[in-house]
Image 1: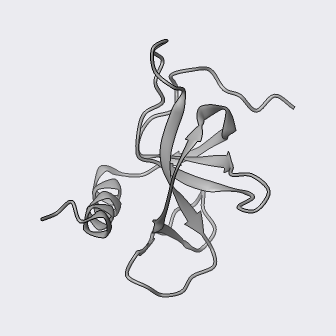
Image 2: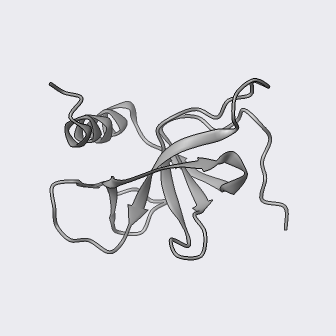
Image 3: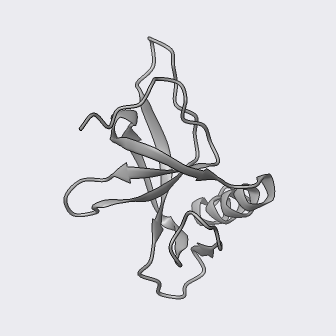
Length: 113
């Protein structure tokens, strides 16, 4: 099965099914960055993982979306992965949903000071 998609089509605020490897498995991830189509840049995207194993802490951002199981985007689980790991697009967050998550991430990273 060829999972690789065309370069340059993955955009920030999209939710993709991503192969995070054996331990983290295949799961949804929210793209924080666009996929680059430039030859002089790595073909990677930075994502926040979506989890169904909730702990009820401040870093979990729950969103009810038809394309996601009940769970949350977890701002402690940020990774940069090869765009080759993107399997398929599940959907896109609204601008306000994306801003809510990035605001929580800024707090987590101390970028709001």
